[in-house]
Image (tube, rainbow, N blue to C red):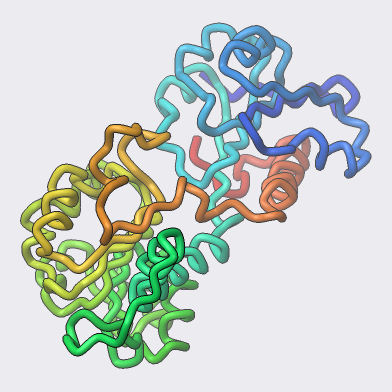
Length: 326
């Protein structure tokens, strides 16, 4: 099916769907004259999606909503990841899709660096000690002390916008950065060394920190499995700001419990919110943040900049939109 056309500005309705983000409020400040509504739940989204010509959504999306979306022409995803959308179904329905890739690249990279620093400096341990009013004494065992990042090797799996920015931050700390990416013909300037993604396993034994910044694809799902974790140094850290399913979670729990890697900074998990029964919560060498790496005070405005640019492109009849997926 050919792509559905957007109605003129004065007839357009944009539907914002997110449990927390204040998209509608920030959009109103733009004074665009475009009608817009906002919903906070799946039930509200189901009830109102028929009004929408444009939908800005992320976690609330389900593919069965397409059957109710007779006016929908364009989805501007609020998230960088788009694995929740059935691309073929959207294409068949004539609905365009763009990701929010890049709008939070700096934020996610900074978060990955923060997790790396926190693990190396044992800030999670200090916070636990603070909660117990415990003043830790001096440590004789060198392996148990805080560490420095200078001279350490960081392996970044996914040297896209987030990975490239993380590489720059890590190099500023004196780290040697190896970046793994599908296309090694570009982006070589971001890291000290660039390798094809197929060579990740071979480089794991040299890495002091392994940071995951790659998209979730059939090739990256469970990329870090038991074999990959076994290949890492016992002193190494794993940092995941990609998607939970890039890691075999059960294998990670086992590796952390048995001390086969030193620790993990985890922003994304297989099931979100992370269930209270998950063994990850109780692991002292796991530092967990609730998928907030990309969440900043500017996030809504960054997405809206992208949305408005894409609307103008579609009104002009351009075939290519920014961050086009479908």
